[in-house]
Image (cartoon, rainbow over all chains, first blue to last red):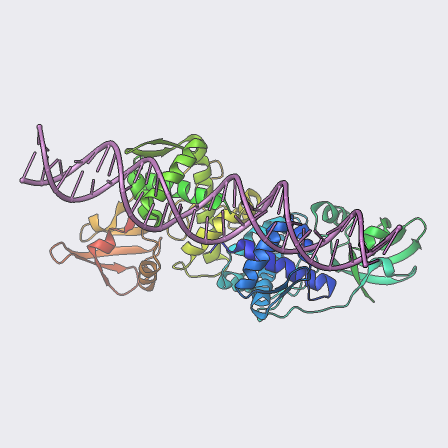
Length: 220
Length: 220
DNA sequence: TTACCAATTTATTATATGATAAAAATTAAA
DNA sequence: TTTAATTTTTATCATATAATAAATTGGTAA
């Protein structure tokens, strides 16, 4: 079956569940995320419900069933493993691998994925710091806070970038704020809406608080 | 996606052109090769003709245009590079990579393919000995002969396996007749329809002439 | 409570890909 | 050369995916 559309829906619903911390996802949100018309989503959600991947209540939203979650997690795992593969093995820039992975993730058998997983040394995070679901379907949880909630004088480690757009990642990459980078918070100006920080061993940089909200950190 | 079917048609037509040494391919043959109904192929060939990928004359057959050949060669290149990648880097068996590659080949951007090409060291052959088209669209030609046309006493090197079915490759792999293997022809019995040969440094094996026809060799 | 606005669903339409059966053309045989 | 067998095409139908517009529902403010 041409299930790559189905896998995309399920993966997106899983990502929204993870991002929001809620089980039930409004169809409108799915439409926005996938760039589809609302009516299209209603139709597909009904089909996925009939096939046992989702539970759905009109005007309320939908939720993954166990079966749906399984397929969604597999797709998300494929996506993140491929992203890491493209960066670590193929040598691509982290800003350009998301769209590639979106296409490749649907074409991989479990055997290929497990081979690449082994090749990468069973990694736990993708290049953006997103946790890679395990082969048996667990998604590791970390409650890291957002960079913009730090205080001046704090030292912390960048752990995850929530915005995977090419532009944002290029920008963040240019100032070397990769996951694992240690930064010192020099100053926060809520009125100006900016945060001044210094990556270890590099020149200080200035971010908008809006941008800082897209960076998760681990306190040190 | 929409164009993976198109890419499959064009790639198949290119392979048939290469295998037969003729430009014009009958639609019936395409249908057999792709496992589709004849009517389906007529429809798609018309579409591909309207789009400038093919030239087509009813009841005669079709031929790739320059534009069609370009896309076909790219797809074939992707296929063969991915096969080699799956064997050499991921560690899969050569008998199982064909179907995988058939799915993955449509999901790869030129950037990804060129990265993997570099990673593999710009290879010239895939695991089955098929030549990998170059990035600028050339398909290297070799006029190797078939194993079954050898004479007793000959020594030659296996260069290419024409049958990519899982069963045949498993069998040939079990007796280690990979491309590069040197073999001595001990005996040929046309009446019995068999050929006796000895891979260098291994026990002799017996093949049907039918199987031997699927193996290309290079005289030494 | 009613009336309006936004969100959501339904109904219709479109495109890509495929199958099947009937019609037409080609090839082979008598 | 006429007929029979085969191949190829045409015509019709089916399924998956998506868009749009109209109708419906839900929430909110007067």
